[in-house]
Image 1 (cartoon, rainbow, N blue to C red):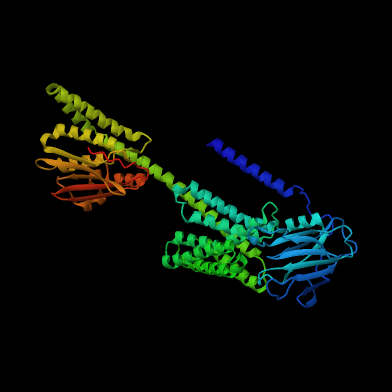
Image 2 (image 1 turned 135 degrees about the horizontal axis):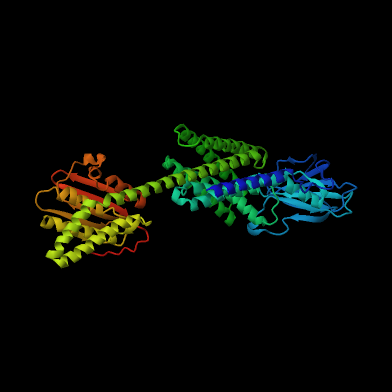
Length: 588
């Protein structure tokens, strides 16, 4: 324990040292070493029969498929190894220098005839000073036709460096929620036994798809990812976001099921249709954006209202409510901005999504920690229960009486004494085995102990005790000593206190979902209202609550007891069947 504290302190000190080194170390400077200039003035645009001067960026109202030509003159003293930079949004582009084509996007037909948004890095020849430059833009979609981007001129490599540096922050903000989502999915698998298995996993997938969409919209150049892959991952993730958002809420709250399920199925159908339309060429993703955006906006509003209701009921953390309201407000504002001036997804949505993801990861870790504490406490209780069980079962009076009976048999009937010694040793072994680490045993082993105990009791009760067995299946697991003590209670508190003869019935049968065991006696019975005081426990026998606790915690089984004074008692136990059971039926 002392060594663990030393290593923890040492690790924290090293991490702090690393952080200080990162803060104060000199960084590699990646700023452009040459001048990069905005090249947004002096442009003339022409389309159809119109021609006018324009300052970029700008937009004009033109029909889909209209080619817009931007014309300007390259400065007389361009940089060495110079280039142009502009971004097209779902547009094709061609660049001409004095009527000679020097660049085209896309250079060839892409898979599915898609047209992704893209950065255009155009390398200019060294002798281009004073020549006329033309940029021709065209989009097959009315919502993106007429968008005229900003243009930059400068050293070709510095243009690339500038773009990567400028948009790396936005890309990382978009990437982190996906990483957190993947971590939550991992935790949901590893810690499934602690309850992180349902809506948390759906949450992880939700934020992975949100991250795919936001990374594609971050405008970060991704040369390692193909153009078609960028298009399909970015545009295809958007209609999937409301699907997982609604599934997350449905699994978590399990209420408003009719409305939410209907909404969920609508979003699933639309996500499938939008992908199918794109693949078949009926409608492309950009053409279906209004519907996808509408479903996403409705899902955000519905989620926000649901969180408000749950927060009022005290069923959710207030930090979650704050994060979801931030996302909802930012999302609605940016949808309005998109359709008013076709702006891209901004920083507010990214910050809101990242805040929600980080907060949810925090809550998951807290939940796992709480479950681990509960599990440790449960293990402590089970260990105490097992020790209590053993102590209650090793009863000196029973041992003395059994040995005296065996001693008498040795003189009168040596063969019966031989069998009695075997039964007594079997009984002792079963009780002492409760100290082992294995909490579960086969019912066949428990049944052997039950028979041994009843044989010993018959030595003392003689013809007063009758037993009947009806067993269909013995090869299933159950906790140590959860049936034998109940049989013992039936004998001690039912048959011993009864005048005359009595019978104990032990029956096992199967249902579709459970193994059912019944212990019935026709003894004196008792008032079941006394179960709260646990009369058996008061008499020095294993307590009903102990057995009930071990059955529930170790197997998820059910325990029920019925009794009537003067009529007898019946105890019914159900053990859930394992999915991997072979289903063998062995009659005894």
